[in-house]
Image (cartoon, rainbow, N blue to C red; front, side, top):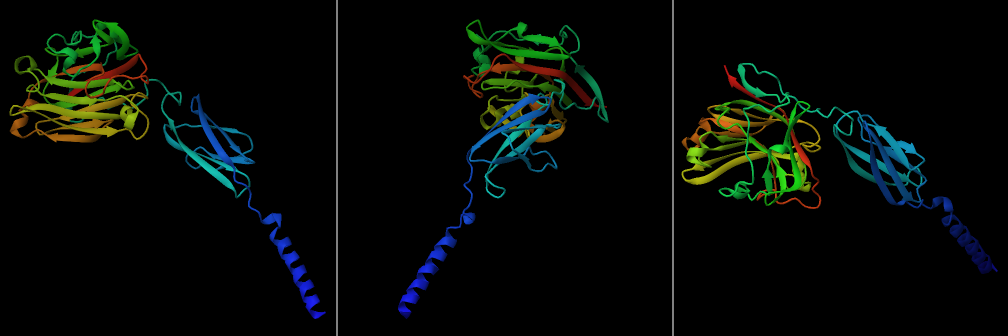
Length: 371
């Protein structure tokens, strides 16, 4: 009898145990799945985030602006107006309960165009520097190009086919225009000569050439695989001594393309003859966000008897000491070259992702020298 009572007690204890362990209030909520987020840029800084997720009851969103907190959204989209350029982290949480959720984040980049700013927005350099005189400038404000500029035409053949770099373009005057205070060089996909692309190349050889000085060039660059814009200088004596003995100063070169942020990277380089051997020395810098097609930037060198310093928007990123005797090329006069090449050994050819036409806009070139 006692044993029967013990067994009955054990039976009811087990029922109570299993009843408690199966309490549905102890079950965790099922997490949302398949969270998908997309972003629409609606203009003037307005951005719309769209989101869906399986088993989501509500969402929380943070667009990444300073001081912003997560906010609950019961639908499948939310909007936000940005007022500053930059990169922002958009965070979206899909919730099945207040404490059960999954998260997705992505970078949202706002450039001048996305904010609806003036197309000429961007960095502008000072119009004067203490201790310097402005000795020459072209502001490109007229309707006719200054006689300081000479067009180099064709594809370099027969003496320098592909301009020595296996470039694919044919240079024409018609690809240069003056509009809205800018010199614009347009690279196009069109046939000319035996080439499938056209562009322009301008020089000041024989007209404007300088030794030393602060040089500022404000420009907005093209973009895309195979584009090769350049703002550079060659030694005025190139016809007598040839390249590289004449020396070359690349104030700015960009190799277009989305790979490794090439559209957001520029290079500053010098080339010279080192006792009969070709030599070069260069540096590069990247934008903290965006690409050089987004807005204007100022590409500069500060060149004196001791060194050449490269600057982007007034900030130094590269320097070379030119006092060694093997660098005497860089103590002689240099003229300007402006061009947009298409293809070549360095950038490679355009591909299916490259959009034409592409433009390089130059707002001004200013040369300052010490008083």
